Length: 435
Image 1 (tube, helix red, strand yellow):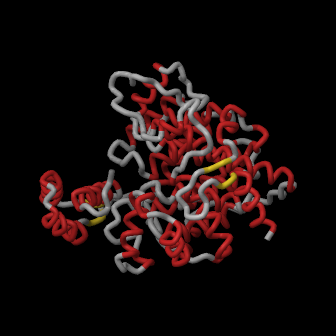
Image 2 (cartoon, rainbow, N blue to C red; image 1 turned 120 degrees about the vertical axis):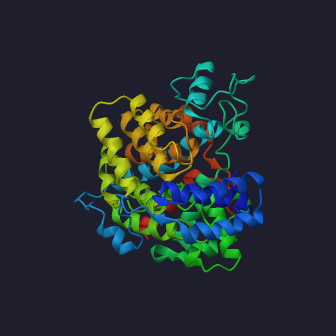
Image 3 (cartoon, one colour; image 1 turned 30 degrees about the horizontal axis):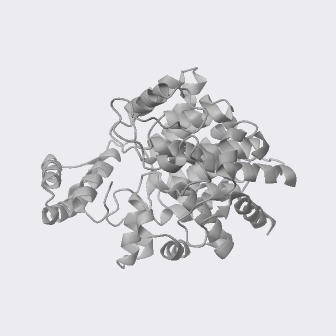
């Protein structure tokens, strides 16, 4: 676990963030950070944190252009608002319900194997007779050789044990986003989001960038600076997982979805962390008027700043698919390309989301299974994959063996929302469109 209160975690993580985002760190400082982290020398690490901020410089040969302000980001996006006919209300209702349900199912599907490597996941699922994965993960006891433990969520998220959607931060943030738009409308501000985090989210139910931001806010760091202050997780997946509701309420309007996502992401993330949420919101918005998941992915590529690492990543995944590469080829490319990135970084997980939606070819159970089999942040990526599948195909197309165990109920750490009906959340989402 990355402890945002412990410099033995945060300072090495900052070193990783700088390295993977094109900064050159003097060898002496790099070695000193790693040594001090090994010794857990907190005072020395705090000194080295200041040295990193002072001495790290962006490589002049860095090939990417990554704007930070909204006008600059939008200007760098090649996407266009195509003339797409609005959906009949009954169809839109089905797609919104489908998005909520499949997001929950995808998240639950990935929970027990979160944190395992792709090779461990393959070994586990083969031992369970569940490869390729098309259902909730079976529980094995004893575990196969080489696998010490499953994610603790196995108790409520494995085959035969799912009894309602278990609590998960990926769903908490979708619920919180619904609350935000209901409360503040489409003109919500970063300050509004910060206020609701403090009121609605327990600190220990947040992770990485969100927890660092939460710490910053309660420590008196100005809200507009909270994403950048001692937050080495600012380009990790935390913002991307908060995107989907903004796509739900903007069906066929990816720019509007991306703009709302920018406001939300700016509280806790920068650069590709922000682009990840904007892209995911646009992807979900595109899914409502797409006829296939592949079409939604291709359209969504226009809603990323074209010179960014994220744009390059999504374009490459699409190019691999167009060149008839295999699923295995795609996963090998992701694993090799992002070997020095955290398993919960935005870039590698966005690649998995795009790849599963392309190679899954609109087979809903298979596509969700591919998201899990890819490894990395299995519950988060597969939740986003689920939103897209549900938004494209509607609730009636979702496999009953994945939806029935959810019992139309979701547990949540968001204050006032535990035990919510998924169907009620969908109806409230539709009400925002009517309003």
